[in-house]
Structures are given as C-alpha cells and as structure tokens.
Image 1 (cartoon, rainbow, N blue to C red):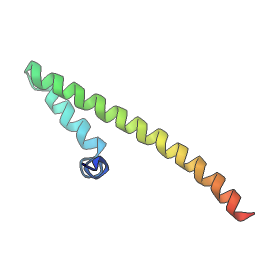
Image 2 (image 1 turned 180 degrees about the horizontal axis):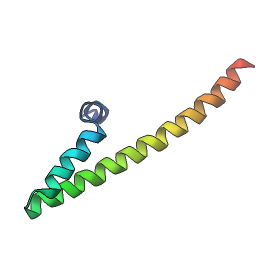
Image 3 (image 1 turned 90 degrees about the vertical axis):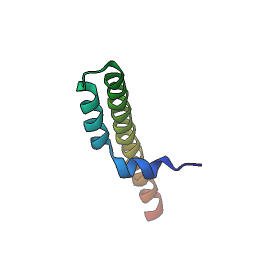
Image 4 (image 1 turned 30 degrees about the vertical axis):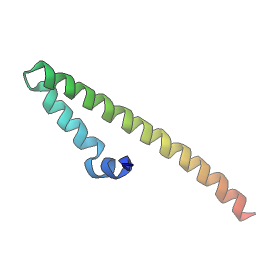
Length: 69
C-alpha cells in the first residue's frame, strides 16, 4: 500500500498551491478544473495538518504533566 505521508512531505502544500494556480489560469476548461481541485486539496490538507498539530500539542502537554508527577 502507498504511504501518502511521504508524498505530501516531498511535494508540500505550497508547491501544490502553486501548481494548482498555474493550471487554473491556463486557458482550457480541463486544466482550470484540475487547478481548482488541486487548490482545494492543498487547502484541506493545510487545514487538516494545522488542526492535527494543535491536537497533538495539547495531547503532549497532558502526557508531560502525567509523567512529571
């Protein structure tokens, strides 16, 4: 099975946004649609990663408190 985290680490969200924007402004309906999809995927990935790191940070603080007592 494919490990998608390796691919996201290699491509990155910023590069996906740039590629999506370039395809969106290319004057053909198919590439514009693909560009919109890439931009949406990058935005959802960025938000999911942002919310995921906030949950991990709070989880680490609670485990740190438990291990110090």
